[in-house]
Length: 343
Image (cartoon, rainbow, N blue to C red; front, side):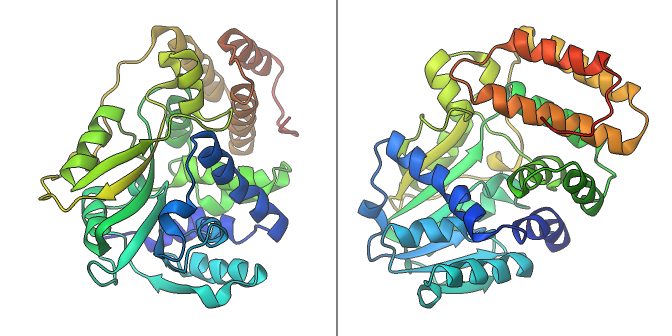
């Protein structure tokens, strides 16, 4: 079964904190990514009936409506998220164009062949059964309908560091994490990111090969693989460097239902395999060793958040310098880290 409690704790209790100004900042990366990949979203959704699957706090919904969607059905398993989505959409004077739908992604309360477009941004890999969820997307779309899908690519520096933190904070409540991160002074977008990475129940990552195979076996054809992104996107870094340090990058696609017979079974329900680059194992060792030395829980959280904050900043540079990042980790480890600040 799906876990509503986990969704409320990880997403609902962080998304509800966003102001209108923060929402605008939260939506803008979509605009940048689509522009950089030369995709005109309005071509697929203008005057079309759309679904925001796993709507969170409504940023996808706002993006769809701003690009001409006729209406948007907002689906989520968190009532907190659905309430926040309504508040957000209302603040943008677009409440009459949406409908909220409290249901799981693998058992949607939506008629078959009734929608023109499905927006599914960073949701599939968190669901109880990604394969069933993908079949549902196929079911509710009209023949020739489109979808935007984003999942995490397997491997690389970022996700392996996240996995280290997930193991350390597995038994820690989301409320405690939020309290400490808030005390440390992190903006809501970072608190949301860390909770998303560290405490979500399922965090599957896929190889580009496996995911593209799943797209085809689920009765879709790929219209566009979005290999460009913001500076910190691993897909952008892979595009610029071809370096395995970024794993398979972010996997973002525009796909089209072509009504082929669905053959997919359970490929999406597990993380893909990936051969890691040797040069980043030293980085993991430094982080694990440092975390083991820190005894107080609050300081562990402060250390982890400082590491991830710095990693984001370094990835946001055009060229990521692993030596500089390792030096930062060593300096942090040697400084008797006390964690009052995140920058």
